[in-house]
Length: 443
Ligand SMILES: *[C@@H]1O[C@H](CO)[C@@H](O)[C@H](O)[C@H]1NC(C)=O
Ligand SMILES: *[C@@H]1O[C@H](CO)[C@@H](O)[C@H](O)[C@H]1NC(C)=O
Ligand SMILES: *[C@@H]1O[C@H](CO)[C@@H](O)[C@H](O)[C@H]1NC(C)=O
Ligand SMILES: *[C@@H]1O[C@H](CO)[C@@H](O)[C@H](O)[C@H]1NC(C)=O
Ligand SMILES: *[C@@H]1O[C@H](CO)[C@@H](O)[C@H](O)[C@H]1NC(C)=O
Ligand SMILES: *[C@@H]1O[C@H](CO)[C@@H](O)[C@H](O)[C@H]1NC(C)=O
Ligand SMILES: *[C@@H]1O[C@H](CO)[C@@H](O)[C@H](O)[C@H]1NC(C)=O
Image (tube, rainbow, N blue to C red; front, top):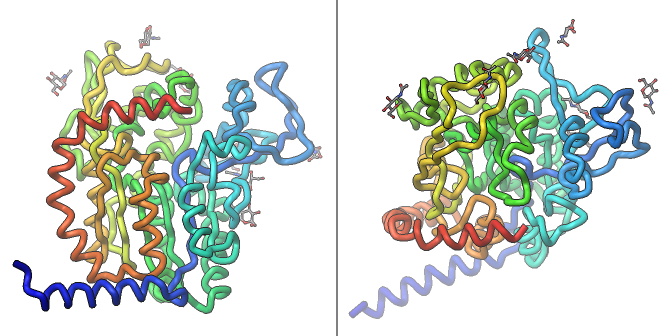
């Protein structure tokens, strides 16, 4: 029997949490930072050459390139327009000659709500969350902002094109125009590294004044094995209508790829990639790029691999939210004697382990390295992308931004949750394999 006074105490406590929850004065303005391939990119052309006769050379205005299903139906043109070049001498990046590329609607939600703005229902990104925010009274560009970016770039390139200057100004604006209430940064996937790099560059007084907390969803803190596949043979994100190697020209040249490579501290001597004659561990990433003659990624690798590695403790509260119970790539076997300059066929064998289907569990859990203020919460059965439309996740994020989740309360909760998370992972893998396979056919 539970004594009556305990029940009373618990209900008083719960009520006090309820009342903070309802207080709009605690509501924090929100900045949404999307993940890899999760920002809408638009481009303007003024080219003298194109790779095929049917590719446009000039456009009067910016138009959506990524993702527009009509552009994607001419991949030869699209991939050539999205090519990015690195000058090793100057350390600077540039767009394809005669092509200007920028993220759509910086500050607004147009570049983060859906992948193809023309087909929002088929390609949702943050739209589930933004709808929930709006139901709570949030308004676009008033206290709800999007910070899309050119996801081909890593932190150094984003710095170069002025993204971080923009982000600083956006956060300052969000705070100033909301009675000084600190902002909450809500990021997904690569966006978590993009935000972490930003946070580690900011002075702590600035952070204290402007940032309430950092909500990191599906964060690849220690990289992801799937990023290796992107460079080696291409990754179609398991979308069946996209050929496996279609995106490889971008994936094998973009600096964001090696930024996401698995980090040596988590994978140590594990063999991640195998050919008949050679094995590669996380420490062999540079050699792997050289063996594949991916000269541009090999050139940027030394620069990008330590932008957020090793992980540093941060001064602000971090909430790591992630899915579990999905088979996640842990290693690849390629049926070739050794790599050379031509892309090999997709891996013959994929070894899988725990994770959210894209990011490995040990990388999601490396959140603990961000310090004592970091709390972890897993959502069983939620996938890397699917989690963004998961009601449990949406509820949790809303609670955080409404100020009902102070440090002590969340700490307690995540400690209680952890043993459960582990058990759920054990039995969940098989149940959810079927569901996720079925879901990936929707697009
Ligand atoms: C297009 O590029 C050419 C040089 O290749 C330049 O002379 C011209 O001014 C550009 N046009 C526009 C509209 O930027
Ligand atoms: C790199 O930049 C330098 C200095 O601007 C220039 O001289 C060189 O041609 C560039 N290299 C390439 C490959 O574009
Ligand atoms: C690509 O083009 C955009 C728009 O002109 C420009 O702002 C950006 O700096 C360019 N990116 C790089 C890497 O040069
Ligand atoms: C910076 O913000 C301006 C104004 O919102 C926008 O036009 C520009 O594309 C942004 N640039 C980057 C790199 O985010
Ligand atoms: C690669 O590693 C596996 C163990 O993971 C080992 O059995 C195999 O002999 C190694 N192959 C080479 C070529 O080193
Ligand atoms: C390797 O790539 C460079 C350019 O990145 C190219 O010049 C060279 O021909 C390539 N080597 C092979 C063997 O394809
Ligand atoms: C490169 O490797 C492929 C197998 O992936 C092989 O078919 C091809 O002959 C090799 N090319 C060269 C130039 O060695």
